[in-house]
Figure 1 (cartoon, one colour):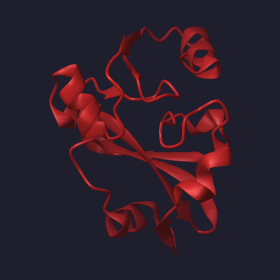
Figure 2: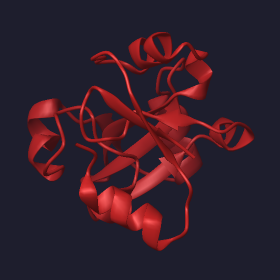
Figure 3: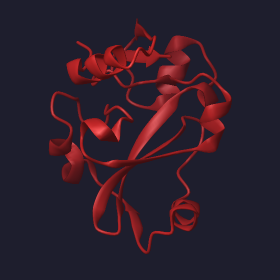
Length: 135
């Protein structure tokens, strides 16, 4: 089932979206393949440690995170990837690794790649590996 707090947030802000069920997929590229869309149209969420605090970086599924660039763009002093063990409890009701890119729901800052603003992106953000949303 889709993460209720996310649906409530989108609904309360008048954001139109669709829920897509697909084969179980564990990576953004697998979601893209299952949904028959280009990987650049899938947004993936990456959890990072930024100056001692967890934050979310959202980028096209076809790209790898560039920690050096993220550090430069944000002015952070230290950035490193967070491990699933470190962040699994931060996203209640979500399968590990299937967290939505809405940091406000989890009290985290979010940094989104500018390239995602150019296209409507589909996000594997239903809190599970078999659903995604498009807005």
